[in-house]
Image (tube, rainbow, N blue to C red):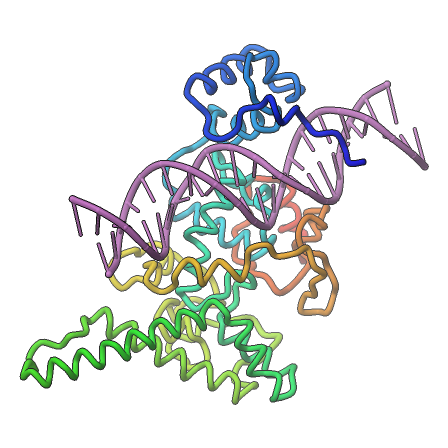
Length: 332
DNA sequence: AATAAAGGCAACCGCAGATGG
DNA sequence: GCCATCTGCGGTTGCCTTTAT
């Protein structure tokens, strides 16, 4: 005995909406509003489920929606808010006028997550991978560390394998070129060298993070480490040394040019996304050991701001929703 | 030019909270 | 308080487009 379906599944059309259907729905809603979604398709002459109509309206037809590319400022806002509230897409979207939760979610899953991974930052915790490695190393007995570190770095590990495999192929090609007497033109481009350099740095930091658990002090605000070996992102030159406290500054978000850490070259989609999709609403713990629940459990927005394991560099004036603003201002 | 792989996005699914009788 | 229904949300899927080989 489940609950009754929201509509007769046999009689409803599914899949892509046609312009004609869009017109019907838009003009009906313009006249009658959006009360009672179940009745809307029937009254509007649509063979659609009410839920489908609601989705179409909220995610596509609403006149106040923006349809273009996300701006750098919007991306920054998404990343910052995600570091605070996690996958609460509706909360994040509420801070971005004209954007829907679906927009934000899709943009995060297809672009931002990869960009962060490419910068050496875990998109779930928003911490540098090396920092996570150090945390793991301090809390576990040595035999466990390697395995858990591997698991924690699932995305990045795959990328490293990719890079290292490519390096090996490049090496063979270079050797074969050399054997043919072609010694003047290096096979590997400067960008490839950059990648290989990155791979080496990551390898070094990975092993150091495991071997030297106190490399990064815990319970301390992240610092921009510049070229400090402990921070992979810093080692890649992502974060400006002048920045006080770890943050996603314009320098890391605004430059999409050649060699930018934002280029998709750093992380392939399948390897990056698999580990994070379908994340259950598990019990999680913050850095103080306080238990909280992932997913929808947080109902009071102010609670979201009560943990120290998040980034606090969001200017409160940037927050459109007064709930956020108040929570932010009362955080002390 | 053809094909495969990856990316991007719209839409669907199912769960949970809100609401009203 | 209970139940039925509506609504909102986050996760997932599937299809179309773009890019790489």
